[in-house]
Length: 131
Image 1 (cartoon, rainbow, N blue to C red):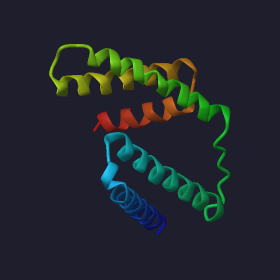
Image 2 (cartoon, rainbow, N blue to C red; image 1 turned 135 degrees about the vertical axis):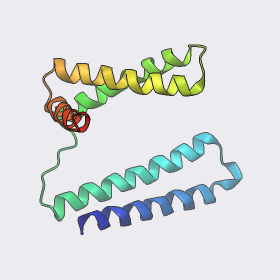
Image 3 (spheres, rainbow, N blue to C red; image 1 turned 30 degrees about the horizontal axis):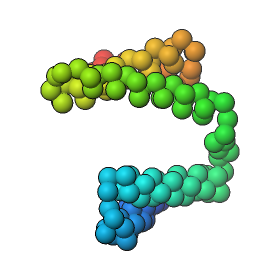
Image 4 (cartoon, helix red, strand yellow; image 1 turned 30 degrees about the vertical axis):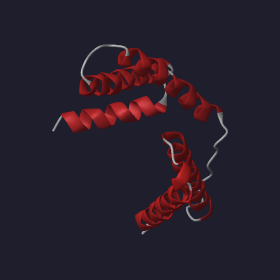
């Protein structure tokens, strides 16, 4: 069904990523690899949005205030992770501290601005942990 379409899009974009990496193998650096992945991710997003709009008939607005709001909140993760990376602790602890801190900050901001996503996450978390 609908999930199969996403699997196909993932395979197509994974192939695009692989081909781009292969094409640039002679000059492949971490930055080039990231840019190849970025291109394949953009293609994936465009394919998904097109499918949603044309086949599921859902109106998707990319350039709306709510989208920018999530982007702005997520930009806070950069200084958080950079700050945690300054700590002299094991890498796994840095990763765990970064993930947990970012989740808490995100949830608190969503709660303060009364975002619907917060309520959905809260409901899901209560169901998940009440088992």
